Every structure is written in C-alpha cells, then in structure tokens.
Image (cartoon, rainbow, N blue to C red; front, side, top):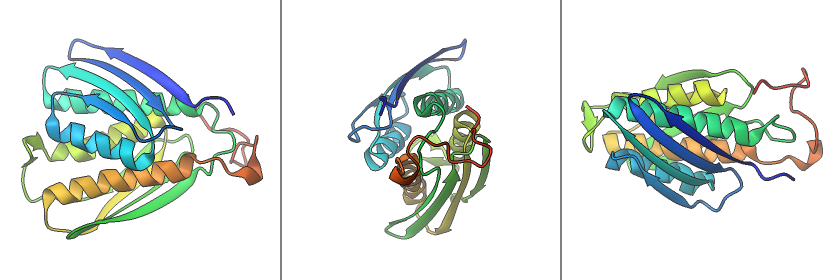
Length: 196
C-alpha cells in the first residue's frame, strides 16, 4: 500500500500554515498555532486518531488561524487518501469524558457537510472563543469533503465538551480510514468514485 501522507502549505494575508499529515502514523504530534487550547485539541486529534501531525500556524487573529488550520488539515487529509480505495469510509465514535458524552458519525463520501449540536456555557474556553469549535468542524468537513455529524449527548464542563468532540472525531476518522481487507483495491461507492 502506498504511503498515505500529504503536506499542505497555505499562505494568505491573514495566516501562514504548514501541515504534514500521515494517516498511518503513531499518534505523534508537533503542533504550534499560538492558541494553547487549540494546540491541545489538535494533539487529541493526532493521539486518538493515531495520525502523525506536524503543524505550524501564525496569524492575525484566532478566528482566521482556526479556520485556516481546519482548511489546511482538510486538504491534507483529502490528498493523503487519494481516491479512497479500500477504506471503510463510514464510521462513528461515542466518547465519554467525565461529565460529558460526545458522538461523531462521519462519511468520507466526497461531500462536505456538517451537523453540529453542542452548546457551551461560556463564550471562551481557555481564552479561545468557544464558537470556533463549530467553525473548525465545518471548515474541516468542507475541505476534507466528508460528512460530519457531531453532537454533545450530555455534559456540563465546556473544556470536557470540546475535548470529547475532538476525541470522538479522531476515533471516527481512524475507523473510517482503515483499510477493509474484503474490498482491497475497490472504491467503497456504487458510483465507483468518490470526489477528491
């Protein structure tokens, strides 16, 4: 099997991003965005998705950094999967974290779409605007061309809610990107193609 890796660089007037993404990694991460809580969430994505992620980002404000990191990660994910041949494609994960229970179900089907059901008690979590959690999921799904349904089933603590969502996303992505030995070499679609 070919290595499922990609590198994406994104330079705009607002941000500078570089991402190295390895789907078949060991859960290792080197992440620096200038937003400590966001770094912590992206570390969860690598650790629990068993992806290797090396990412550096700078930018004029938190909104654009989070958005452009999500865009760059989505592009790298999509490029690393190429034509999606042999993958499981659809998966879900339900993740508990103390008071919180989060669910993410997704389909790597070539169409970017997000349903996000989570409310936060405060306008920020560890100095990061809490509405950027949803924005990350939406931007990632659009660029990775995946359908994501993310939901907080129960919970009180905002930090736990966000972290459980990222862990559930990681576990679902890990499961969906695994190679299904029963369909080796085939694209998991009746159309025999998944948009890249």
